[in-house]
Length: 516
Image 1 (cartoon, rainbow, N blue to C red):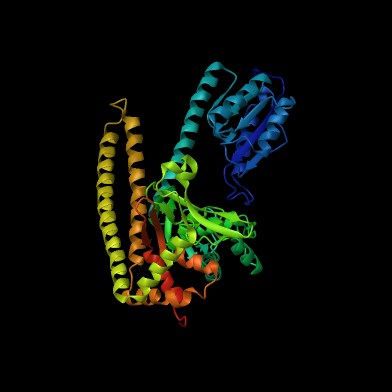
Image 2 (cartoon, rainbow, N blue to C red):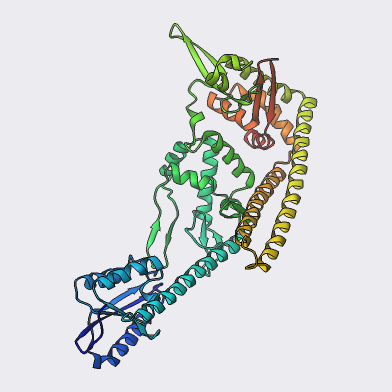
């Protein structure tokens, strides 16, 4: 390390500010830091110190990284032998990362360049100063980490209260001028509702992408604080899938895996959102495998082998290259051999006809329709009771864990296992809160799916007369709308059909006003 003597010491003054706020002023914080550095260099003029005219100013750059233009230029000049001493206002202006700082010091040591802090009254010319520097820098990094933790905690708290805590705005909402809240953009909200309706109609992503493109609609476009326009790209499958799965549109706010009631107004009803999620889940992220159902398997994705508890998949064989025979085959039998499953396979037309005839029979018999609806209501009531019990249990679990966490915090430092126990309790609380949010969302969905007996009976009664007038694609959509699952047991030949309460509601809307 170079000793400071009467020879000329070339000093490079480095300044930094983490944000660009206030840098447009005639005299800003970078100027203040440089002025302090120049005054310090002037006070050492008798030692031969001279201030280099080059400015090394990084405005709007974090100290957590070395990817800063002025800093890189400074280090290049160090390696080129143009600098003998670096002067900073405080050491955390140079870097806030202990690992980066160690690398910087290695470089300075190698090129025999000193580091001086104006406000902390030391330099690196002595071993004691270097020790003091490392201690101070450790505190600087500790301060940086504490700030990061506080920021994360602030965001988590805001999200749990349903507040908007920043990030990229989404189509359908604008950020309030004062921040912290989302406001509905009516023009964009209309587009979002139309996109959800289009997906419920097409039940595939690519046709919706094509339709949206023909209308000239794009992803959200907004202006950053720096005045730069970003976003506004055309939709593709990925961006459309992201939009359709964003629970923000139902008036909710998320934090990691947690779902909380938001302060913003909902654009999409929970019923429509849940219907879209069911179709997406059935189709996968590709958004339309069942649409490529070229052989008309009406029960694809909803028929299961009751004996094996696994899916039955559509397949077919051909005879004389003209006659095609369609089947549903147990996937377990396909993988492990036909001897493992009593169901094996069933002719597709036979099971499809049975399901359709059952729906027609329910629709044509008011007593049977009422019995079916009553069964669905009982299922909903039973599930509601089960979810409310789980909700109460989760509340007790969170309260117990929070009480124990408070006690652990009070004992901090007395027990070597305290840190691990705190982490375990926090994980338990997060897990319980996530499940609590899921339970609340399911309860809300059940409440929104309450059946109106008259409307539901009318929809079921409309099924038979309209069925034959539907295209094959429309028939498949109606079946998937109504039926949640078809269970077939080849051992005793039984078939059980489970209905969607929300599907009957949707069918009511679909057939509303249709002439029979």
